[in-house]
Length: 154
Image (cartoon, rainbow, N blue to C red; front, top):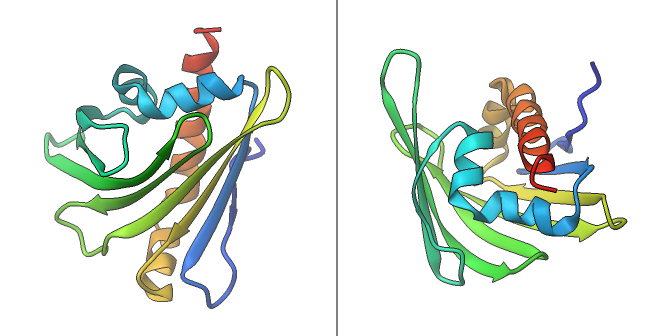
């Protein structure tokens, strides 16, 4: 099955550009990123905090099959409804340094929209380590769940 979420990783650069077109209106795609109950469903994580505003922050927690809890958090630096979110992302208790995410939401038609994520890592090596994980499969699965869950809200 073709992966709908595309990941572009240029050699020697410490960034990724991730794009995905959704069969969702722009407002619903954006809502999937800012509504705690929806985020929990498609990400499979617990939302402890989600302050959708400039200088806001967020905190998520997930539990692995062995019962271990893993935290994710960050600060929201820019928030423009239905357009963009700029935030940091940190995976707690891992060797990964904090990275910067630029999320841009674009209306294509009344019923389709596009997400562009530009992620900047501290180094090329850290970016390459991330790509060695099942990152591509994970983000594709998450985006597929997002589309399935949110399409029911139309």
